[in-house]
Image (cartoon, rainbow, N blue to C red; front, side):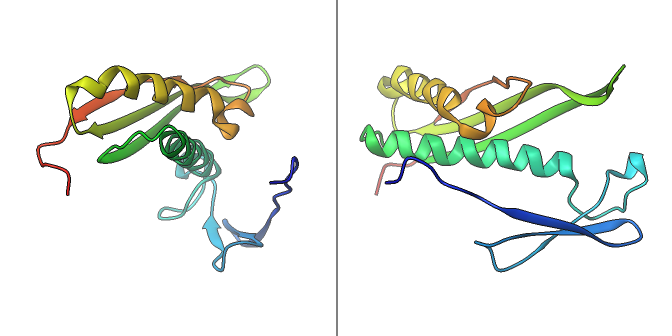
Length: 149
């Protein structure tokens, strides 16, 4: 695998209150707008939500890769990302980011290892490391009620 990778997204304003973003790797464009509280349209993605999507999806893929490399089996992982935006002297900024992974594992004996791998994912998540506001992580572990197949 190469030591450097380049990613590219292009966005443009398409009409009065909305824009489009497109990636070379995805077939569909994303329609976006400013948040409604800043005059944007309802029912469209906002840059704030897209940033949180990047954080949550990066954490998810990072954990999956770590778990796979560690031969750690889990039943399910859901990752919620939440951000708090505040007005400052220099403009609006994210003042807090919280990542809430909810991991379902097969048995209690794996809880400690699961927590360790989740913390490792937080430290290796490329998107989180690129942000000025370091996310905090709030972990939830659930035990599967079903036997593995």
